[in-house]
Length: 227
Ligand code: PTJ
Image 1: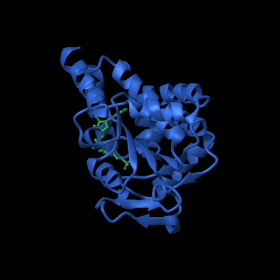
Image 2: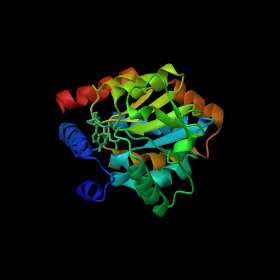
Image 3: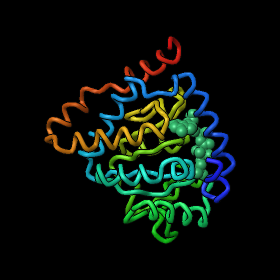
Image 4: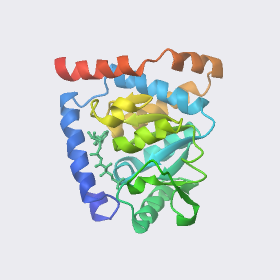
C-alpha cells in the first residue's frame, strides 16, 4: 500500500481506508471465514452466469492485487473498469498501466470520452464507462462507498462487494457481500471460478438462488462477536 501511495496509485485516504479494513481483519482472525468462503463461491457463480459482468477497480485494489484481479477477470470472463472516488486522469492511466503490465487485455474507464455520468451518484464515481458499468448486469467492487452501491442496486444491477466491515452501507446493501480481505478473497474466487466454470448454468442458478445474503452477513457478524 505504501509503495502504491508513493507511485501515485493510492490516495492518502486509501491508506486510512486500508487501516479501517485491518481493524476488522484482526477481529475476524485474519482468515477467510466459512461465511466469506461461501459468499466467494456464490459470487463466482453469479459472475459466470451474468451476461455482462464487470470488475470495478480503484486505487487500493490495484495496489493490493492487480495480478490476481486480472487473473480472476479472465477466469470468470468479466471486464475490468477503473472507477475512482478521488478521480484523476493521471491516476486512471497509472492504474491502467499496472493492470496491463499484469496481463489485462482491455481496461475500461480510462478514456474520458467513453464515460457517461450516472446521475444518482454525487461523487466522481458517477463517471462510468458506457461499454462497462453502464451496460453491466453484475458489478464486483471492493472498498466502496455506500452511495454508489445503492445507486447500482437501484439501477437493477447485482452488486458483489468485498468489504471487511459487515456493517458498512455497502456490505448491508449488496446482493452478495464478501466479508474478507481483498487479498484473500480474490485468489479464493479465482479458484472457485475454475471449479465452477465446468458446471451447467441451471446448476449454478440453483446454487445462487439458495444463497441468502442477510443470513450469511449475520454469520460474519456473529464470528466477529463470538470469535
Ligand atoms: O477510489 P479511490 O482509489 O479514489 O479510493 C477510494 C477509497 C478507498 C479512499 C474510498 O473508497 C474509501 O475511503 O473507502 P471507505 O469508505 O473507507 O470504505 C472502505 C471499506 O473497505 C471499509 O469498510 C473497510 O473496512 C474496507 N476495507 C479496507 N481494506 C480492505 C477492506 N475490505 C476488504 N479488503 C481490504 N483490504
